[in-house]
Structure formats: C-alpha cells, structure tokens
Length: 196
Image 1 (cartoon, rainbow, N blue to C red):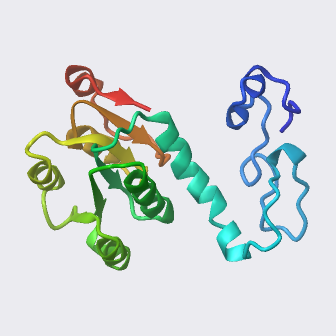
Image 2: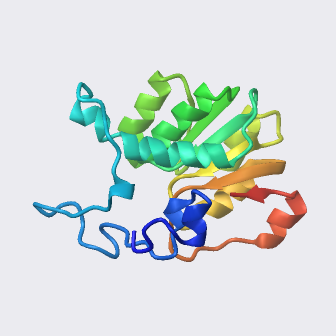
Image 3: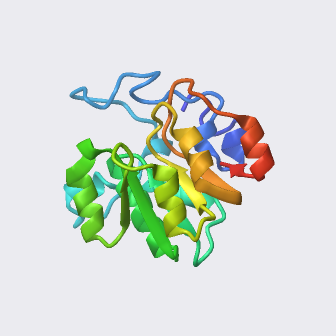
C-alpha cells in the first residue's frame, strides 16, 4: 500500500480503503507474473500444514465474510443470494452458519451444475430465467420477501432485483461490482431498505 498503513482509513483498520493503495492486479502488476513484490501489510501466514488448494479459498471466504460482518443478520432471518460464482456459494454457507432460517440461491439455467451443488447442500434454488424470482422468493417467505438480499453477482439489474426481493425494512449487501445499472432509490426509500 502506498501510504504504508498511515492514512486516515488505515489508522481506522480499514486497510482495504487506504487512500494510497495500489491494488495488485489493478493499479500494480498482477499476481500471474513469475515474481511479484507484495507489501507486508498484504501478506498473511498460513499454517505449514494447510493444503494450497484450501489456502486459495481464504480470499473469497474473506470477501463473503466481510459482507456478512457489515450487515445485521439475525438468527432466523431469510437470505437471498444472487450470483453464480464461488463467493455466491460461500456467502450462502456463511449465512447458513450464522443462523439464517432459510437461504435461497438465485441463478440462471446456465448455472445448473452449481445450482445442483447448492440444492445438495440443502438450500432453496430459484432459476431466474425459468420462473419469476420475486414471486418465487415471496412464496418461500410468506409473501414478505427476505430480510437480507446479497447481490454477489454485480450483473446488470441485480441490485434492482435485490431491492425487489427484500422485505420492508430489510437489507441489501452489495458484494459484486457492476457497471452502471438501473436502480430506483425511491423504492429503497419507500421500503426503508438499508444498503451496505
């Protein structure tokens, strides 16, 4: 990090928001090079006996965990997770472990292999290009919608979908980064939704 951990955000412990950061792979040469110089603040020791394939999952688990630490998930809440990638499955697992009553995973028919995996894990599945996702989620939540919608996809329109899925006074956790997409802040205000 360019600021050496001394900027305002670093002093708050929010290193991911450093004012002088040089994100490897974005503002600095990426990790696919043969050799990469990485600031020590970005390094974490892993146990010597941890297999490298498990160590490789630490970063995506950290992304999902960070989102769940920012929201106010309570035991018994229902959660919708939108997005077909590995963080999507990890977010569903972490929400379940945090005490969610129901975890509903949304994806496309093209994601069938991953959706089959989450079905086997015991989560509800909604295939958004085969059924109306809002109606499907409301049918599973006594018509209210979920307490928490996690937009892990970052796809065009998924933030608006999350807003439609969440109940009045619910929360949205935005994990996936997307280009500009349609979003109606008036609906968020009327529903009194908190967006993290």
